[in-house]
Length: 310
Image (cartoon, rainbow, N blue to C red):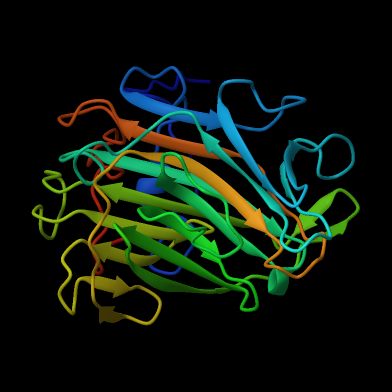
């Protein structure tokens, strides 16, 4: 048996992908070993401790809710954003770190965020997962009373999984086309859990195939590209990959943001909880190399255009 040699970090060997399939070339080439890789600034939590690590997070609660790592049973090792029967009730965590800085995702750099979400009662829950203003305020209505957010939200009564971009109170919501379904536990399997993620390229990213003058966000659900959103606020600044239609882009926040996961019962006086399996946020340490640039064509840094392999 011959030796296998690698010129860079070990890559995923996922399936090849084209538009609408689960994986594309830049997913395959995302390097393993983000934590400890000097090319990355990384926040990673698999929520496999008994409790949240002291000093890593600021937790908030409404109505007696609590954010707690689950122990025992099928939900073991997941973060529970727990509510109570009080109206309203819920909980959130905010990482005690900041990202972004003074320009959109730092000029010339790429940021990647990913987590999961499973919800007990999708029609009676408000949920947010993504980056939000440091000093995030938990309230009963999404986007939870804080301007400057980039991430996924679910609004009480709808069940639609939306992607929201808010800069200084100017917000645009983009429908991912995914309708969430209540989680179901069968044996040791959790069904109806969604993987949510986005890839944010700052303005001036040299590998931007379309226009380096604008920041760009690729929105993924279950690692399928749903939207490409630009900070070009013109009528064609955003592209819906599923429907192949354009809409207006949106200004992107340019202040310090923190990782936030939050859920409330939407004022329904019911103990409706949300659960997440892990939290990952990784950003380029320098603007001229490192993060997501491995592979013969540097596929992970190359942002997929609407006519390329996803």
